[in-house]
Length: 156
Image (tube, rainbow, N blue to C red; front, top):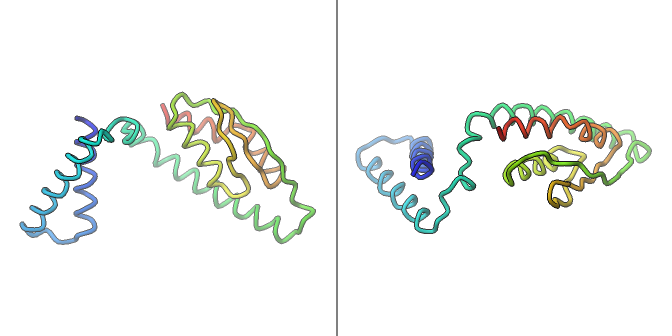
């Protein structure tokens, strides 16, 4: 029930932000639409803790800010490699351990690796992520475990 209420609130806020009109008729349509969507999702059994990880609600925004900074720094590093030419690029495949407890935590970690320029998650088996790194520096940054620790902190 908690997840259905959270979904209803999120859909209503999304409707209000996108609509910009608060007439009684549109508010009525919003209520009917939200109830229809939530009822449909509950009947399909897709409203649960995995599809709506409420425990991440307050911890993920700080992580996003850190990840945005890391993406910008990695973009600059990749651009520098492009300008320096082939001698600065040393592609390699490394394996990193994901210390997250849940599947959603492992997915956040693997996707964060892929979002960061210069690294791509290739495979996730159990707790081992195979990563293609463009340079030795990007591999070394990943092997420090900073991203892994931050995702573990987000996960709780």
